[in-house]
Image (cartoon, rainbow, N blue to C red; front, side, top):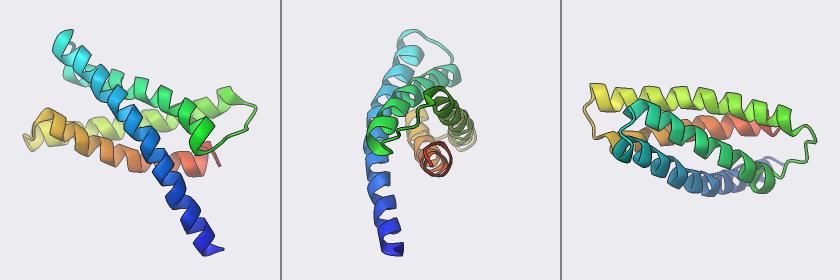
Length: 131
């Protein structure tokens, strides 16, 4: 039973990672457009990229990763959004710390921020949103 649970968790994490990678493209694309082309503040641009990616990730994770059949989509999306907002806080804090305090390149800092936020998002969505 424990091996099955471990195998299932790894499989779910891989699917979550694939969805997350697609979200990463959305996140970086939106962030780049707002920061570099529209000249919006880098942290506002980061938040917009993160939130748009989170919204598309909800749909894909609901359908493909967790195969949710919860009829209360609004409640489930609300849970996902709460997890994403906390993830955004984590993402922004790591981004700020790496970029502002450690003076690491903005986009390299963003990669670190995405990795940390992804761990939070996976565990929280697996154990809370789609449980």
